[in-house]
Length: 374
Image 1 (cartoon, helix red, strand yellow):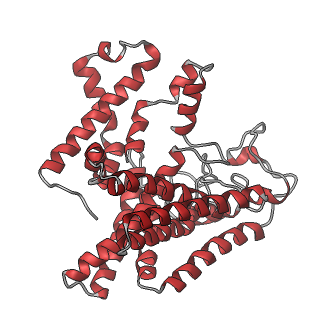
Image 2 (cartoon, rainbow, N blue to C red):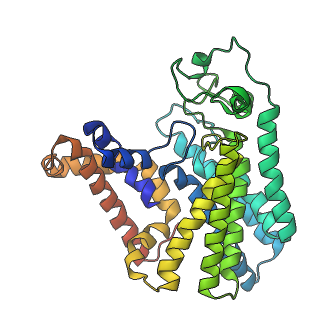
Image 3 (cartoon, rainbow, N blue to C red):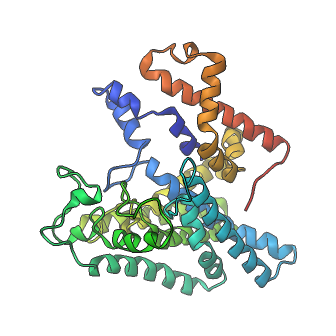
């Protein structure tokens, strides 16, 4: 959530201002989405959010059971939560549109589409969960492979891909090319079933509805992590397990890409990306676990705790009031305080101001125990 909020600082713009700087080049890469193949730190925000939904589920179920919750009542809540997340995602994507923007690639919508299935899998045995995980990844990869390649006369410019775009694959990996793959074809059919301002032809970023399927696998990884942390093992044993799992999944994703079986592409959430991003998130979790639980250093994390405790609230705020807060800061403080380091840093400092305002709102909510939950 902090990394998502940091988008307001427009850090990639500093690479344009200082193109010779290796430092700002690295910062720009990791604060924006990669064009197609690969994975930056920014590309880990959505899978981390999805992963943590899964990681929280075992704790949530244990809490509800302790309060006398029955399976059917919890299932009803899961279905309601799924619907609420889907509709909230569509609502936020429809802001400043003339009508409802029926799109399903938003983070909340993707989680919502898979959440009820995740809930049901949480009650299955580990063997069934592993089987479901494998089937999801293999079937998703296989469906892309079986979808026919575009013909030699296919015009990529008509699906938003410029002629000199350097990220198109040839050969077997062409099954995973932008806006000529299975996920694109599905959306051309599916999204046009809904009322639209104009017919859907392509998503300019290559994002797709079907990504909710492997997102379910990412959330299932989170469930396993949550269950692992619930065990009575020592903190050191738990840490070793997180690290081992992180290394294994990261290497598995890389191996599939190195063997030219499946590229790591977030925008269509390929199976290799599911493994690779899941592994990296496990390693990040291991790092935080080592610091906070093994070493016992927790005070430093309070600013992040304030943000994480109201993740739905901050997600909604980032979509609805960021422009309002930005305008208010300029209106009441002027541009001088934000231009003190020169024009290139003005949007960065202004964004930092927005981040501070957002955090203070969340801190106010935290102090008064106001937590928005679905």
